[in-house]
Structures are given as structure tokens and as C-alpha cells.
Length: 228
Length: 125
Image (cartoon, rainbow over all chains, first blue to last red; front, side, top):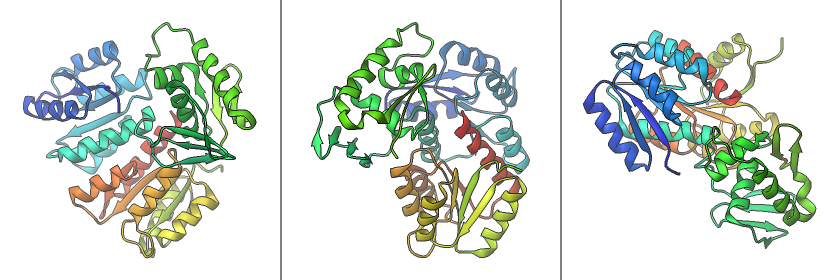
């Protein structure tokens, strides 16, 4: 998994240190905010890929931070990590837009695994490594190989990652911006020409031969891959 | 009324599947219950659900095996382990094996439903 920005909003320095150490061990970049106000400001400025959020925070509390983030961003996963352990608290947190809720004292391994689980779904990384097949095509992520009727095709790294992203999205349409972000690692807000994606799709189609129809253009939106 | 989503619940305890069916249909989901791992895999192929609730200990293939097999071929389907296995090691194994969430029994019914709603939100964004 590539290096991703993770925002931790936590006023307890010891917990913050443990999380920082473990997030960095996983290869991520950990950003810290010690109160809710700073948390929201950092979220807006840094656009992290995931937020770990304490509930009892100085200035603006965690629930309010969650509500403010969700009012402008529905996608970035939020994991609440808190001493509030009643069922009512959990329900309120989840209904407010949290994607997961873990109570303190917590297991670091469990939290890190839950972080990975949330990122798997939102970034499409750490996807299954088994061989995927569609018609006479086979995509083998472990060997970094695409086979047409059993014969490996010569693809560039970008072409392979582009196809893999569309394939593992299982029929879902991905926009050019999403593809730029997933395959090229370019932030959506960056002003990059999305025609790069179109050019790579055209090259991929030429290589896919009889199976090229599986790579569909969805006009005005992006691309999708039809496996069935 | 249109269904909010299709869910398969797999548990060898009919009391649990009965309870889950009642809870989930009450929320507007359509639910199919199965009682072992192989039936869970067959039901997945037949129903193409949005979400599967899997017990860990079931006859035939266990919940973890079912979870890993499904995750290999489907990165989108939501998988929730609902199990009496409470150790950190099992939780980590379940989540690393492809589950999106892991809830231990006994569970709070309202929290269970809140987590289901949260999972479906993730499917939509």
C-alpha cells in the first residue's frame, strides 16, 4: 500500500504517539491535531485519506468534528476511537457518519487492521491478489501479468494498474479523476489533463483485441470494465 | 416497498438467523438465511447480495474461509463477521481475511443495525 495521509485528532499525547508509531510503521504519514478546531482545519488543508477521531476533545468535540467533515465530504473514512463505550454512544457516532467505532482501551493491532480495512474499500488498494478472469482474459496481480487466451500480453505498469483498478471496481464506473488518483497517484484537486487517461485506455483497448469491448466508455462520466 | 439492499445471513443457529431476519427485514432489507458455509457460497452466486453476515463456526466451510473466498472474487460485496470469537487474534484474522466489520456476540441490536447502515453508506459513496 502506498504512503497515505492519515489524520489523528486526539488530545491524549500517549495515544497519539502509539498511533503515530504504528501508522508510520505501516508506511503512512500521520498528521496530528490536539483539538477539534485544529482537526477540522487540518482536514480541510491536508485532505487526508482517513481520519481517526477521539470524541472528547477540547474546543470542538469529536461528534461536531465528524458532522462538519461529513457536511463537506461523504467519502473519507472516519474511525472513532473513544472511551465512550455505551451502545447509545456507538449508535450516535455511526449515525453521525463514522464508518467505524472502536472503544478504549483498544488493541493497536485491531485498530491498524480496521484502518487497513477502511482504506481497502475507499482506495481500492490491498485488493485481492487472486487471478481474475473475464472471457479469454486473465488478470494475475501476483505475477503482474495479463493473459489473453493464456498468452501474456505486454503492458506498461500504468496500463496494468489502470485495467486492474477498473476490473476490481466490478462494473462500477470510475471517473477520469478517480483513475488519475488511483493509477497515477495524482490528487483530484490537481489541475492535470484527464486526456492522459483516455490515451492509456485507447492503448489498452488496442492490446485487448477481441476483448476490448469489455472496456466501456460511459459518456461524460468515465470508464467501466464489464467482466461478465 | 423497494428493498434497501439484499443481505444473506449465514449462521448455524436458527435463533440467530431468525432474529437477524426480523431485524433486517424490519429495516427494509430483503434477507435470505442459510445455515452453513457451503450454502453461504451457493447463496452468494444465486442472489448476488450487497452484504453478507457471516458466523465464524459453521458446518462445512467456516465463516473465515467463506469470507476469504468471496473477497478474492468480489472486492465490492460487504462482509460482516458476527461471531462469538472475541480474541484480538480472531478479529484481526477476520478483518485481514476480507471482512469489512467484525461484531462479537452477544451484540446490541441497535448497534448492529447502525453498523449495517454505515456499511451500506460506504457502498454508496
